[in-house]
Length: 148
Length: 422
Image (cartoon, rainbow over all chains, first blue to last red; front, top):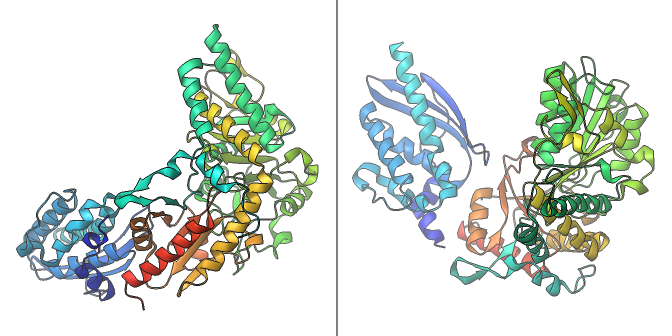
């Protein structure tokens, strides 16, 4: 079993020094997602301004994969127009559900390509997706709050 | 050489075919997840295959030779389980799907009219170290009936905090439900003392023996009546048996007074469109076709344990647990949750390692062939009590060797170096 395929240095770096961590103002939506099988959890806030993901802030408890994933997520989507961020989300989802058969596009996913190896470990895919699912939920709520 | 190990451990291990297999990279299997589920000896596998190959039929209703053989095998399994528990009567042994269903059976039937009905003003007492399966059914019962749920807290060293027992157990207490051995902390609870105190206030005592049955000798008939629980449950797959079968033992007059749980075939005496009457125990609580081949497998499993001797199994677990506690203590940054004295605990040891999340520990250990469990082990309140979101748990059993504990400790050292903790 190739541990290094799972624990790429990029993942361990994000785990040790997570980017954009902590909960910040302002935000339109805050969500709390848990992985009931293992207890990993994330509280995540999204702030959308002028159709752009102005901020993603979070407080995550969990393994290296789930923590690093939150960090990479925030790096990728902050400052992006909502549509573009949603496309990145879709690409990441496709990668994680690809059982290791999907070739990631580094131009789109940047550090997120380090998670390609995680897709070969079915038990860990949920760890990598926890914060992304939370982000999609919060972003949807954020948009509804603004339009509602 | 460590004192107390099972005699001829290497021979015993040969009874478990799975222990021969290797994992990715040709690594030997180091199975330290027996509190999750135990491995199965060949005699259990053979008993189940033999039943399916030669005796398969539905029980208690098929008027042919196979039906008679299958019924006999199923009821013989009940006798074996009764002997395993030292049950005062074989009719007090009810087969269920698992321990969870057994606990739900009790919590559910206590909601209905009868001498033991739980209602507004009544109290149910559990503990903070229970498995979710011994928490949620009682939450459901008390929420549905207007009763109050209370619980024993825990001391910092992982024992039940009994200082408030006089306040907790009162004439309002109808049920005390607790685990004999914690699946997370490993703690062995003073069942006899708590049962005696509960009986003094007229409460019934429900014991979750899921972790106790595999490793402690149980002799219900030998217990003084005032210290004998009223209900005791365990699951088959943790005592070398298959999944899909659990056991509820209950005092005969209590089970007789409780209303039925599931309605269906086999649990009736007669049925008319106007109403039904019910079979006596044990069949009253065994509606529908039961897990027949699973019961046969469980019977073979408890027979096997009986041949080894539960006192010897307990001594082996004690010896391995002590050796493991010593080994884990050498790993920098490792904190064991629960009692640190092997005499006070069972063979499940949960721990935290500074700087590495339990998932990551389990993943790295798995890459070395060491199988453990990581997560909250269905005991979130117990984790919360100790400020832990999750933990890593190693759990040994009668086939565990000291060398396997060494492999665990080595793999933990490797985990620390992999995550660059030095």
